[in-house]
Image 1 (cartoon, rainbow, N blue to C red):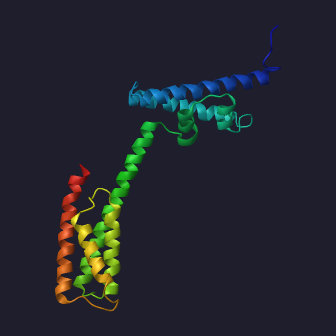
Image 2 (cartoon, rainbow, N blue to C red):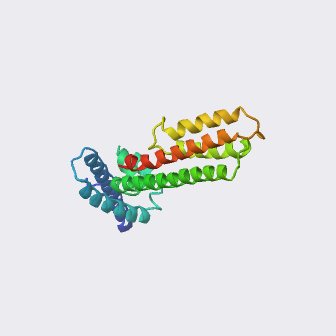
Image 3 (cartoon, helix red, strand yellow):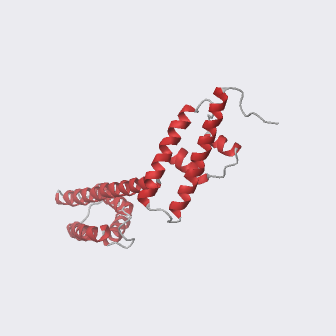
Length: 209
């Protein structure tokens, strides 16, 4: 006895779309695994993955009434395709593009932090030149500089600038807010800032290669 899976043309079309969605998810899972195992080149992976993502977006949009949740569809048919779900539903872009975007974002973030460090170095040195030597004037500037240096992951923990700023901040913390640096202390701090700034600028090309 022949069992009919659908009663009319509309129902038949729905099941055909289900089958297409099932096939896209399965194909994406196989593609993700092939990429991870280095069976396929990044260029081939990206082309095929983008094609599957575009097909998935088109199909899932047309099926939004009958398949409101792709995750539920995945679980209902016991598909076991976690990588495909991540790529199609969560990420929405091929892994190659995702990694490029992450690297670009990281580079942009680093550039912004470098600029922040430079600005904090210059502000601290200029303030000393303007004879702003009270503890409550110097301490915030060195704290800002220290914080920005610590945010820059390309600098080692024992980088000269980090060490010297920690030492100066510890020294200032033991003084009163209204206390002022002596001429000798201000001169030494300026020297340490200048020396640290030069080391910082010298470290950048090395760190970036």
